[in-house]
Length: 68
Image (cartoon, rainbow, N blue to C red):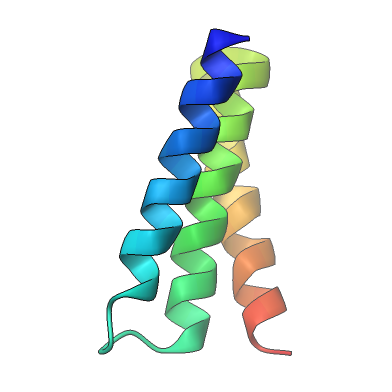
């Protein structure tokens, strides 16, 4: 349970930080935000390998979602 709280706080802080970058376009924010969320969730579920796979998948999905 503690891991999930820490992960949620990390995701929230990173999204707030990314939102403040005026020079970043929407696609970049979506890609990086998706990678962060995917990496944190992947690590919580499957450890280091899951973090890497989650970051890749999250970055891809975040990129595609931001383009819509």
